[in-house]
Length: 226
Image (cartoon, rainbow, N blue to C red; front, side, top):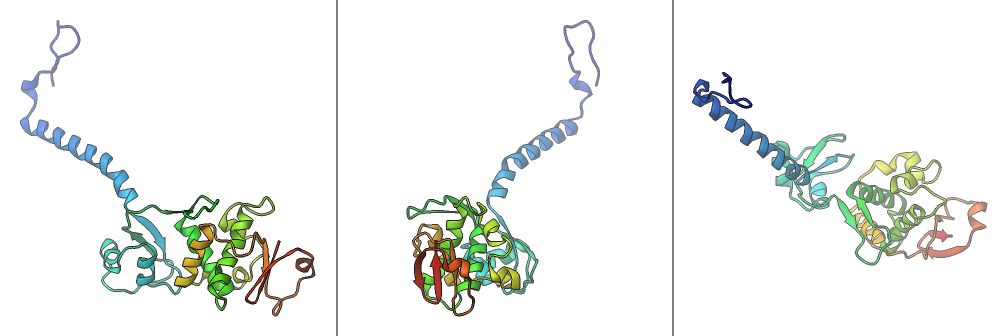
């Protein structure tokens, strides 16, 4: 590169540039521009899922509304075998949020939050009717919006001393399909409990404190209280 003197500013002498140099500059410009444009699209088109004990590719594919084949191809898997703690990139291209659609007042929750709620429902109400499962989810969501409890699903569920499945580890088991539906129904505003903040099974546990609270509903084997 040379600079011609005696002229205003600076002027590059193009005769000193190789045509290959100019081509390389053009290619670099194109590649950088393409990466900047495509990177947001790539980020939007995939989610990250950490495999929990008992999960299968089929269940994960159903949850993210994609296919087993797509997940395997995206992650370079040659078999259907997965293991707890494994990181999977899910090519769903869909929103990572679930939005209330039946007049619910809880706004938007991430897939992970809904999945956690479903795991608690599975653990607490596995033998209950469908309405009993939704009721357990509703209690968690009622606590989320109550000033007496943490304001997130994870905060409520993992608050010390509140839910037995957290203490015994059953919270880590994958949810059933029915529990996933119940979690979504609860988020969408269905509250069979009438606003309850507590529930327990009187055949398995006794709490004088809970019996002093107002009874809202008795659904299946669970008592729901305000």
